Length: 513
Ligand code: MSP
Image 1 (tube, helix red, strand yellow):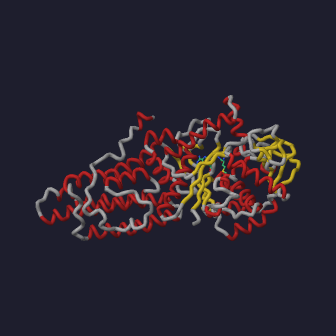
Image 2 (cartoon, protein in one colour):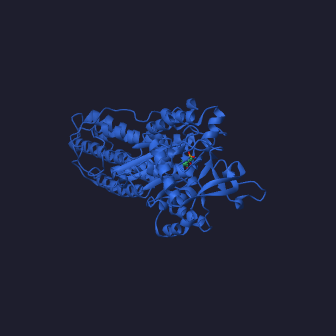
Image 3 (tube, helix red, strand yellow):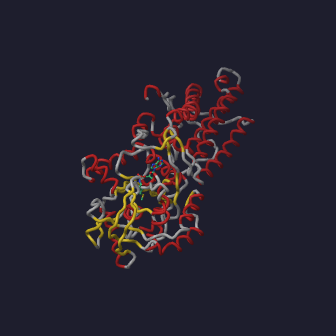
């Protein structure tokens, strides 16, 4: 069976993991977990990009070799995945043999077939973007767009990939396929392709950059960063071996908006076309996180350490915040105050409150198990109708990558559960000796537990650990798929719930600051 294959970009191993890296992994993980629950077999690949100038430059500054630096940083990125409950099936490093061999085999094949040629190149080169840039991008005052950082002029012999010849095919492909999500980003790619595309310089002389995969046909050169990095998506799933078609074409490459054009949307499909491999089915492109309204950067000290943050405040609350706050495709702002606001309003005071209320009352009044729902009146009927509506909206939001909406609707349904609790007020019913009140008490606790069970299931992709714990408190195992679990029913009848516990401890922001 073809697996649902999803990837993240591979992060440059030239610094500690930051919030942007964390977000991309969380977003991809939400998709991966959602697809597993929806019944797909999923393969989720992430990893790090170890070669190139950025890594070399950082290593030099630190007085280390590039290899020393990436050996130090690789475990940090693996730890980021573990700390954030990322369910990746594999982690690829571009220094691994399995990757380097594939890159070299592809280069040799393309060279043998004349798709790669040697030429002379003189041009402006962005050190930050690791790419040559066009003169027309120079600003009127002779400077360059900030995006490019330091720009230098270089002339040298290099190897080129015949990118230009794939332009027509690519335009045609993009006009006929939904390739980039959200759609407005696909239009950006088409706009880029309105201008002629040059062949792509894919090498660096070893004399200038030694930290890269050697060109198999010329040892004086190493591979240019994108021709190395992009290939991870296929080297990581056994390109050239039996079983590759279980994974390829990838269903989604999840990337940030900065690496859509031209690398993922132009170079990558053309490279694949040149080796006779289908393009990935789609690119899912997210926006950028800012911190306190400003671009994240090392120099301004605005970077948030996601590992430390999740240790302090919990991985799932961070995952929830990132998912709830960002509409995929747009940019978003991260501040501790916004995080704390969501934490207390949505998690502690809403979900946490419901859980502690329910466990408290059930422990006291249903120690031998929930009696089942014997009364059905307007409050019960409308609660069930609310769930039906929420379920439809939540599932369609998941399907359409509107994860912030999926969370908004889920929390909205939890609010409805709390409201139902206020209406039925089981704490008052418990004080009454009236037989009907006893029935209502049992009914309301059973219904609250059932509603919580359902809400928790749809939280699983975003808060796997906390949702799993809540299910455990209800005596439920975490299911492998949603099948048969999302319908309102009597599943918990007779179930004795666990003792009260605190899921969301109070935040002590001032002290933490
Ligand atoms: N190594 C390349 C990608 C090669 S993929 C074949 C790279 N690395 S990166 O470390 O700079 O970025 C990795 C991912 O993190 C990219 O998708 C990028 O968009 C994302 N983010 C980096 N900063 C970000 C934010 N501030 N916010 C959200 N995501 C951001 O590019």
